[in-house]
Image 1 (cartoon, rainbow, N blue to C red):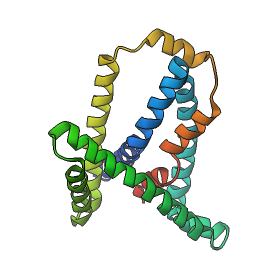
Image 2: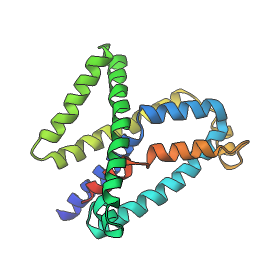
Image 3: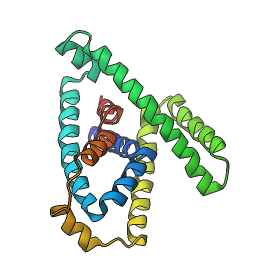
Image 4: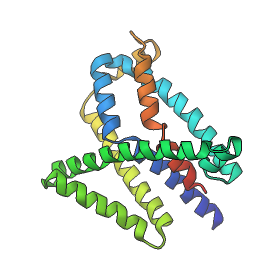
Length: 205
């Protein structure tokens, strides 16, 4: 029973991060860089994945072993640092989630034909409702898992329907024509930067 609970917790944390990372900002960034770098963008994705795994596992390991929130760990290292970290995460989370709500509004507009404003309002109500449930943690885990599976399925569908030049992309991933460090930093910041990694890590507590 405990093993099943831990598995659900880990899946919830993983999918919470995944659904947070692939938002409207991430899609806009990747679209821009794909247009700019073409198949060479595969190298950027590969490097960002390697950095993401290292950063994410390191932060999650520290949080899980210490059994403390990140701000408490930061305060134990340097008094007051946790408050600075919290302010930065809240500011970044606010900026990102304004974009996420706007993206949800645009998505519901495309899917159901309702206005973006009403779509954003409805999406916000659903998000608040999840946290109002007594078993909010379990509901959030299940909701994140379902949303994550849907997101992965849609990503795979788009991947095959778009019919990209897979061979060229694989070749340029290993030997790119150009290396854009700004694209790497932007992609890493949009996937494991700020509140996203801490949201998944704190779910383990």
